Length: 416
Ligand SMILES: NC(=O)c1ccc[n+]([C@@H]2O[C@H](COP(=O)([O-])OP(=O)(O)OC[C@H]3O[C@@H](n4cnc5c(N)ncnc54)[C@H](OP(=O)(O)O)[C@@H]3O)[C@@H](O)[C@H]2O)c1
Image 1 (cartoon, helix red, strand yellow):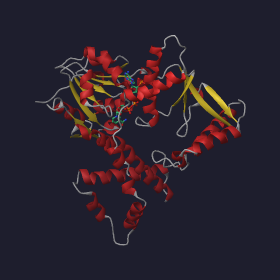
Image 2: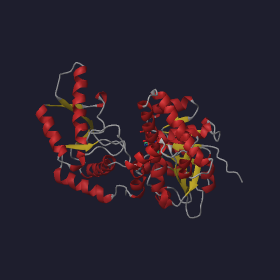
Image 3: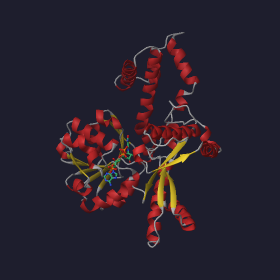
Image 4: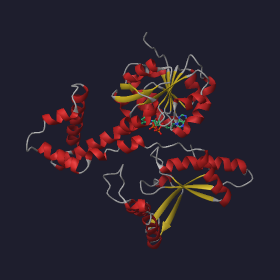
C-alpha cells in the first residue's frame, strides 16, 4: 500500500531545512502550501513564503497540522523544540524524522510521547536538486521505514543502515558533499591555470564530475575499471593520477578520521567543570570563543557547556549581577564591523605580544587542514592579519587609525 503524506512540518529552516522544503515541493511529493517550515527569525524565510510555503516560528502549530515532523535544528536546540511540540504529538498519527547529527532515535523517543514513531535521516544539501544520498535508520520494529524511504527517494537515493553507522554516514554523505565540491573547485582552478575562463572551467569540471558519477551509478562500473579506460600508456592521465597519489590524494580524504572518531555531546560533567570555575572566580566578565560555524568544532562544543553552566549559575545566584559575556573570534573570521559592540585598539607591541602567545601554542603553527586549503597562512598569521584588517576598515570609515584592532560582541546570556 502506498504511503501518503498530507502535510509535513520542517522545524529549523536553515541550510538543510530550506533545501528539503524546496526538494519535496520540486519533486511533486507535496504542494508548497502543505509544507510548514519554522525558524525563530521568520524574516529569513521570506523567499520560501513567497514561493507559497507556510512559514512561521510556531513549532507546535506546525507539528499540530502535520503528520510528518522533520527536525532540522542544531543538536543544542533539540530539547527546546521537543518541549514545544511534545504536547501536540500523537502516537498513531505523527512520525518524527530527525536529521540532527549525533542524536539517537532513543534520545528523541524519550523526549516524545510514548508510541510516536521516530526515524533518523542523514541527507545532504543536494536534496534541493533531488540528488541527495540519504542514509536512514529506524527502530527495532522498523516503524516508519517505508514512509521514510518514500520521502527521501523523492529527493535522491536512500539506503537503510544500522543506527551505529550514522556517524560514518554523516562523514561520507553530509560532509562528503563539501569534499566533492572542493574537489570540483580544485579541478576548476586547475582549468583556469591552463587557460579557461573561470566559468567555463567550473562547467567543465562539474560536468566531468557528474559524468564520472554517472559511469558508476548508471553504468554499474567500478571506478578503477573506468580509470583504466582513460589511462593510455605514457599518457598524461597516468602522470596525473600518479602525481595525485604522490601527494596523498586518497589518504587525504578526511572520511577516514571523521567517520570513526565519536564525538560525545556535551554532558553534565563538562558543565560542572565550567560551573566550578564560575563559582571559584565569580567573574564580572567572561570571554567565550565565538567561531561557531562548525557544528562539531571545539568552539561550539565549549559554547554549549558555558551556556548551560551560566544558566545554572544565574539560578544559583539570583542576587548577583550577571557577568557580561564577550564573544571573540580569531583565525577563521572576524566579527563584521556592524555586528561588533566593542573595538579594542592595539599597538604594534600589543599585537606582537598577542601573536607570540598564540604562536607558543603548538596547534597554531600549522596551516588549517580543512576548510581553507586556499589559504596557506598558519593560524597565528591569520589571527594577526584579521586584527590588522579590522584596523584598516575602521580607518577607511574615517575613525581613528590604529595598528590593529580586536572586535568583541557583548551578550547578557549566550543565545541558543
Ligand atoms: N547542512 C547539511 O548539509 C546537513 C546534512 C545532514 C544533517 N544536517 C543536520 O541538520 C541540522 C540542521 O543543519 P543546518 O546545516 O541546516 O543548520 P542551520 O543552517 O544552522 O539551521 C538550523 C536552523 O534551525 C533554526 N532554529 C534554531 N532554533 C530553533 C527553534 N527553537 N525552532 C525552530 N527553528 C530553530 C535556526 O534558525 P533561527 O536562528 O532563525 O531560529 C536555523 O536556521 C543539524 O543538526 C545538522 O547536523 C545538516
